[in-house]
Structure formats: structure tokens, C-alpha cells
Amino acid sequence: MKTHSRIAALAGLAIAAACGGTRSADVSVPDEALPPGIAVASFDSLWKIVADTYVDTAFVSSRWVTVRDSLRPRALTITRRRELDALLGETLNTISDSHFYIIPERLAPADTGAKSDGRGATGLVVRVAEGRAVAWRVNSGSPAERAGIRPGQTVVRVGARDPAEALDRLEAMPDQAKPRALYEALQRLNGALAPRVGDTVAVVMRADGKTVTHRLVAVQAEGRLSQYANLPPIAGVVKWLRLPVQGGGCAGTIAFNIWLPAFVGELDRAVDSVRSCKGIVIDLRGNPGGVGAMVMGFGGHFVDSVKSLGTMKMRQLSLNFVINPQRSRNDGSSMAPFSGPVAILVDPMTASTSEIFAAGMQRIGRARVFGQRSAGAALPALMNRLPSGDVFVHAVADFTDPEGRRIEGSGAEPDVDVPLSVGVLSEGRDGPMEEALLWIGGQ
Image (cartoon, one colour):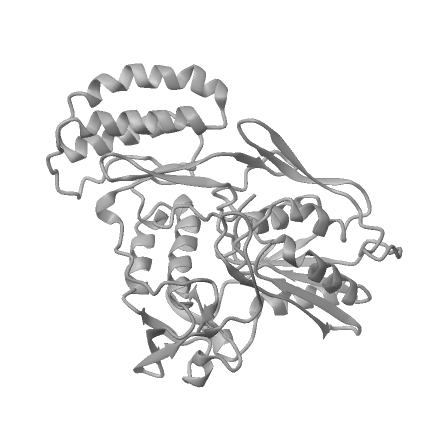
């Protein structure tokens, strides 16, 4: 499965409550007049998109036809914006799945952030802690660190983007819609912090009661630039360490930021390098996904029998994410799958393939998950602009875990919830990693 290269970058602004909320019109919007024919053209466009792409073909051939026949006559008479919003909301409410919603054109923010080509970085990574945007990671030697930015400091502004404004919109949304909307908001914010090499982004930070503006010039991003299919270029990084744990011995930590075939060899070497440790921590925080089939090979390092992490169902086929034990290396030498405890770290920027892996490993009883709930953005989805100017976001597949439950919308739920703490970040500590290491040390 591919990362959401066309996923709803504006999902945080949807009038529809993704993940099961009521998709009703926003009554606070001015009731403007629509050009003649726009309402029925928008209804027809939305109806056809679902008819052509929705994975539940039985619904499309029966119930969806009834929806068209019953609601289209109303679309022919609509001349006002609120009436159209209500009609589209009522139309989508007939679909039991939650990952279908409308982003009104009027709510789409202008694309005022710096452009990225995957090569640049300022070294500052943002998350939300205690209700505000903060510096989560500040990479050693980066422009952000040289400017004096430290973890835990409040991010007031990034270029033209106001994090507080985005978080206010999030607070107004139904609880079911917030995880994915937070993912999209942070994706935009962190994307603005990674412009092209040599480009400058102005970052306003607040610390110790003082507000300071830093002008950060992007440098070459760490890692090896790779691109797959229609995914944007990304500087892929695979890192592994051996850290001491309570009671003696070590825990291996493996962190990587994308699932791409170019990094399979590095992931195999990472597991081999920490195989002798007491346990392994797999850090998927900030990993937006990538090629879904990779979970099968990587997961094989940690199971001693055939397991399924779940099933992806599409229009024409179903893919069972089966993992087989890995018992040999690329050079032909034999090995045994790692049998010690496995911890997986997730956060609101963990999405897609990473969620499938984390939730699947958790639910087959092979891993314990630490951190914050993931994005709930497990499915490939498309965006289509309707004649009204609104954007229709819709999933083109379905995924269920080994127990038949969906990850879309709900995300991977940690066994040990570790909210981000400004105080912990300011001390240069990593709360979720600490909890995972303590658990491994106690096994």
C-alpha cells in the first residue's frame, strides 16, 4: 500500500466527521447562491466516483442506485450553498463506512508554505504537547539547533502557518475525526519546515516568556533519497542502537522513516545487529507508511510460525498480509527469528503501512505498543474536486486486522499510553522510549 500521496491534505477542515461522525451542513456558513446546474453536477460527480471506486460492489449495485434515484431529483432544484451541503452530507450518510467526507472549498487554506522536494531539512520536527505545537526533535548540528531551538519550546508560527489556529479547528471537530485531522495538520506544518536546500523558512518560537524569530536555511536532509511509484521523494533513514536496560543486557532500537524497497537490506542488517539483545524497540513515530507488502518480510524476523497481520480488500483483489518466519540471511547463512520481547513506538504521525504493522503485531500478541494513538489513516484514498469546488475524499480499499477490526479511523491504540510532556521534552528525554526500555528490562 502506498503512502497517501493524494490523501486529504486538508482533512482537518472537513465538514464531514470522518470515522463515523454525522456528515451534516455547517450552518455557520453564509448561504450563498450557486451557479445554475452546479448542485446536480456535483451530486452526479460524487455519485459516479463512488460507483466507480467503492470497494463494496454489492452496495454500489443495489443501495447506491436507490440513493441516486431518491436524492437526485432534489439536487435538480437546489440553488443555495447550504442546501447543497446538506444534500451531499445526506448522500454520504448512506455509506456505512466512515472514511468518506467533503472538504468545502471555502475552508481550504492557501498553499503558502515553502515547497519541498524531499532533499531539504532544517532539523526541527514539531508535535503537539499539552495543547500546543512544540519542538519535538531538534537534530544535532542542524540549522534549528544552531539557532538555539530546543525540544519543548513552543512553535508560534512556521512561515505563514499558525499552529494555534489549526489546533483550534481540531478542537471543534468530533473526537472520531481528530486523529486523522491532527496527522494532516502536522504533516503540513512539518512539510513547511523541510523546504528545498538553500531555501529559508521563518520560525517563531516562544521560550522562557520570550518570543524569537529564527530564519532557518534548509540543508541537505540526512539519509538516502529514494522514490517509489507515485510517492514523493524522501530521504530515507534507518538507524539502530544497542542501549542498556534495567537488570543487565541491552535493548536494540530500530528507527526508520519510510517503508520502501530500497531500505530492505538496511532493515535486515539492523535486526541482525541487535539480535543478541534482550528485546527490540521498533520506532515508527513519524513514519507515514510506504509499500505495504514490506511488513510481511520485516515481520518475519519476529515470528516463529506463519501469521497474518490482516487483509487489504480492493475492488479486484484481496491481499492477505501473511508473515513467514525468516530463517536465513541473504548470504544463505541460517538464523532463527528473534524471540525476545518487541516494543513498537507510535505517535500521531504514524500512518498507513506503519499502522498495519503496529496494530497487526500487537493483535497477534507479538508486540507491545507504546506512545500515542496513531493517525488512523491506514487506507489508500483519493481526492476529487467536485464542480462546486469542494473536495471529495474517499477510500479505495478496506483493511481489517487479524481479528476483523478496522484500523482506519481508530489507529493503533497503545498498550501503554505515553502523552508528550513539555517538561520531559525540555529535559532532553524521550518518554515513550523510556517506558519501552523499562518494560523490556523487566521481562
